[in-house]
Amino acid sequence: MGVNLSANYRPTEDEPFMNKRQKEYFRRKLLAWKDDILRESQITLQHLQEDTVAEPDLADRASTETDRALELRTRDRQRKLIAKIDAALRRIDEGTYGYCEETGEPISLKRLDARPIATLSIEAQERHERREKVYRDD
Image (cartoon, rainbow, N blue to C red; front, top):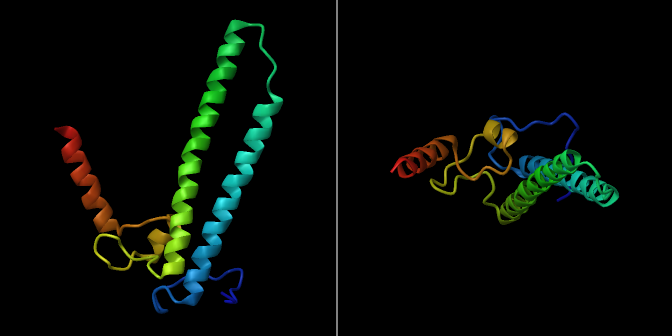
């Protein structure tokens, strides 16, 4: 994109919504998040490959298996998170990033900064969660 951002740049409400600087800021934030997840996954994979010693004690073996299952579940959640990050990066490229999928209104910069993969405004998210709760209670 060729946008020059200073290290301390933060999007503000004073500038046009989803201008080039804001898009670049969120692109970098998403890519850094994805890199962190991939790095952690690589470390986990190495750990799982190295940690193949069969525990002679049944309790130790059960504990090791529980730890592995938990680690794999965490990695599966992170795999799904990477898919959401990739989808957010595509939305940046398409020009739809930062806009609520339900209302088309801009999602607040604070929300995007806290949850850069957000696809709904806070209001739409709250409505979605209320509907989900109503259906879940039935």
